[in-house]
Amino acid sequence: MAKKTASFICQACGAVHSRWQGKCDACGAWNSIAEESPAAVALPAAHRSGRKGRPIELQSLAGSNESPPRTQTRIEEFDRVTGGGIVPGSVLLIGGDPGIGKSTLLIQVSATLARAGHRVIYVSGEEAVEQVRLRAERLGLANAPVELAAETNVEDIAATLSQGRTPVLVVIDSIQTMWTDSAESAPGTVTQVRSSAQILIRYAKQAGAAVILVGHVTKDGQIAGPRVVEHMVDAVLSFEGDGAHQFRILRAQKNRFGPTDEIGVFEMTGLGLSEVPNPSELFLSNRDRGAPGTAVYAGMEGTRPVLVEIQALVVPTSLGTPRRAVVGWDPSRLSMVLAVLEARCGIKLGGHDVHLNVAGGFRISEPAADLAVAAALVSSLSGAVLPGDNVYFGEISLTGAARPVPHGPARLKEAAKLGFARAVVPDAKAKERGGKERDGGAPPIPLDVIGSLAD
Ligand code: TYD
Ligand code: MG
Image (cartoon, rainbow, N blue to C red; front, side, top):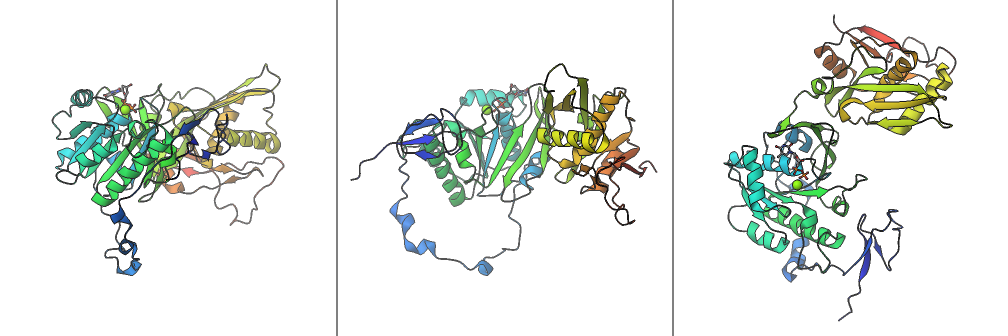
């Protein structure tokens, strides 16, 4: 028998190295390489018989033109992000900082499904059954027929799961605490996490039960260890939020059965997570209308418009290199907007510190926020307060032109619904009228106010 040699595996990305080294060449992480025995995940011989690998013609698959069947949790914000409910036999990974509310969310999802008559098993590797029960009691869910188990060995879990009616949902909280007999490494190592996930994924596919794996995220936003699981699962969701605000955002990063740009918004209350059906109202609730440097941005998150306040503070710098601090937006996008303002509009910001904040801890990924950012920056620099009933959206190009962005009507409708009267947006018809896009020179940014929303 061949001698088993230990390998050195990066705990951040799963890359295998032949010897120990301080830095992982694959992902650049320092001190992330640990010695592990190789995994011996062998399938029983029956699984390897040639007959099972017979190809099936795509056409012959019944119902192939239908969307997958789904079990709705009736927690709408959760269903939206998953693409309409959980798909039987699928495996979902939910990542998030410790303490963000992953266990709370999943016990609520489990309880709702269990109350609807589905069999749900919640396996906790972190808390004792009593702790999970106490939490459910605090959330008013103690009477929901969720089956709780405190277990960390996946072989034991698989044995438990195979008894009785096939569950609709199995929650594994968390994948980092799971271990399997087939791998010799310590629990929490990449080999253990990967092997345990493999066994649970195989269980999900064979039994047709949906499995949700919880994964903790490290400081830099990676799903630690479980990052190696990301490509094995059907969907990866992240649960975000910051300690200073009580709302949480569930975002799909990968989804084989649905869109990846939808978000679910929740608010952490004393009674667990409650759904926020209209996030714009929440994000704009503490708006300071009379201050310069704020502009309301009409954004889109998937199919849903979300209005948020962008705050800018532009102050003369006392440093050689001015500070550029951004919270909730892409710093390189801010640099670009600043450069365009300077080069195309003659607005000099080189001697100023610039602080940009998306109110409420929200994170924007769209370039459509450029115009709102520019408006907030100019407002702060000049000290002029922007009209409180204006919204802004549009992309700014390097030439200084403001470009139209998708979903204009949906953004305008949401703004009108929330009482905004006017929108400052790029003129979509400028080209049709024969006016070519302006490139350089002053006045460069065409801000065309397109009508009043009120009428
Ligand atoms: P938890 O779900 O344990 O987080 P995770 O599983 O992601 O580590 O959430 C823990 C936090 O949530 C904790 O700091 C307290 C807070 N919390 C509430 O504010 N209200 C509640 O009803 C519950 C259950 C928790
Ligand atoms: Mg937890």
